[in-house]
Image (cartoon, rainbow, N blue to C red; front, side):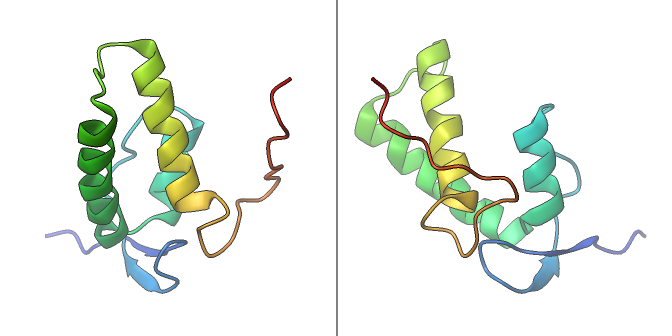
Length: 95
């Protein structure tokens, strides 16, 4: 039986068991795999359900998918998280 892979969770700021695999096959998925615990991911899943209901999102659309990914990145690595990711540059107004 394999032991849990431990990560220093960026959301909960402690050493905890990590995810067994990246949640997505992209750079954000890799960053989450390396820096987010199972416990913090479960918290995100609950938050995502709330966001989907509140905004009545249809994840079949590219716009909804991009919106959820942006919310996820903000949840784990944005201003509200304990520390921004390396190289993070806040987005200026989109004009």
